[in-house]
Length: 590
Ligand SMILES: [Zn+2]
Image (cartoon, rainbow, N blue to C red; front, side):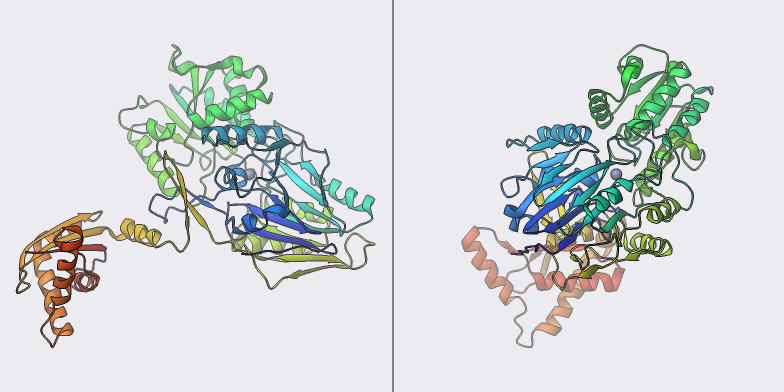
C-alpha cells in the first residue's frame, strides 16, 4: 500500500501516465493533505504488442490507496488519452467527482452508459474562465485551441503558489470552434499569480509536437483544400478523420455545401460524436445538409465521412477497402489526419487495398493543407514560454525524446526545467513568496508511486486488467511472433517407445511443414538427448509414468504434460530448424 500526504508548505506533482509515452495521461497534484487528479486516459498498444490487448491503462493502485484524500478528477478535454480510462478505473474503490466541460461530460456520460455501469457517474460541468474550488485547491480552466471542442488548460492555485497544467494545446488564429489562441493564451495564469502575490511555480507542458518547426496551422485553412477536392470530377468521395475533430467536420460540411454535395456521417464513432456536437450547438444549420446513409441520391452529390483514419479493423474505411465494397476507379479516399506512430502498418494495409480497387488516395503527404496538427510546434511552444516565464517548466505528454526536446526549447527561452518520468514525484516549495519566479525550489523526491502499465482485455461480457508481469502476456506475444505447436505423443508404457505422434501448428506454415516431415525424428532426437543426460539409472520415463498413473487415478485421463520434455523438444527444434514456437506437449502412455 502506497500512502503519501502532501504538506501545507509544498505542492507535489506526480504523473502516473503520459510522462515517457504518448497517451495514458494521468497526473496528480498534492497539497495540504489533499490530492486532485488531472485526466485519466488510455494508451494504445503498439503494433508490436500482441495478444488481444485493447488498451493500456494507468496504474490505479495509488488512487485506490489514497481515495479518501482525492478531491476530484478534472478532465482537460474529450480525447481518449485523457478520459478513456475512467470507464475502467472508476467504481467502488474510487468515486470522487469528475469535473469536465459540457462536450467532454456528455461524451463521458454516453460512454459510461454504453458500458452498462449501474453506478451513476458523478460528473460536474465546468466552463473555461469559471473558477471552482476543491479545497485546498482553486482551479480555473483556461480555453485553449486543440483538435476537439472545449479543450482547456488548468490554472491551479494553492497556498504555495500557482501551477499551470497545459493539457493539449496549440496556437490557432482561426480554430473554427472556440476563440483564437495567440501566444498570450496562458497569460491569465500569470495574472492570477500576480493578484495573489505568489509565484507561477511551474508549467506542466504538452510535448507531443515539439519536433515540428513549422506552425501547427489554423483549422480554418483546411476548408479551401476540401473545396478544391470537392469541385473535382470524382464520383464517390470518402473522407476519413478523427471522429472527435468536430471543427474538421464543420470545415468539410461547409466545403461540401459550397460545392453542392450533401454529407453522410458513417461509422458509429463519428455518429456519436456528431450527435454530441449537435447537442452542444457546434454544427448549427449544417445538419440540414446531413443525409441518412440509405438516402437515394447520386454518388456525385455526396461526401461520405468515414471512421477508420488509423486503419482500425472493422471501421467503415477498412470495410470500404474490402473487395466487395462499391468503391472503384474514379472514386477518391481522403485521409484528413496524421497516422499515429505505430499505426503505419494497418493504415498502409487499408490504403493498399483501396489502391488495388482503383481508388485514388489523397492524404496529408500529397495535400498538406488537408490536415493541421492539434499540438503546438516547437516554435509555438518557445513563443509561449517567453511570454509566460514560469519558475519551472516540466515537460509532460511525450516519449523521453519529446520531453528532452521540450526541455531544451524551454532552456533556450530562459526557463529552468525538470524532466521526470511516470511515478516520479516533484516537490515545489516557495521560499520567498514575493516574486513570480525567484525563490521557487523544485526537487525530485526519493519515493515514487506505482506506475506500471495495466493492460486492458475487453470482451462483450467483461473487462479484465492484466499487470505487466502477467505471464500470459509473454506467452501471447511469443504466440504471435513465433507461432505455437501442440505435440501429442503416445508412448509405450513399458519401454517408452514412440507409438504415435501428432503435431498441430498455429501461425507458422513453414514450421507446419518441418514438423510434418521431420517432427517424429526431432522428437526421437529429443528423447535420446534426454536419455543420455537424464539417467544413468535407466529410469527416463519412470517419473512420467508414475505421474501419469497418479493422474489417471485422479482425473481418469491417461495423459500428462511434461515440462522437461517440452523444454528439451524446443531446444532440439531450434537446433535443427531455427524455429522457436510456444510448445505444449501432451504425453499419453498406453
Ligand atoms: Zn488531445
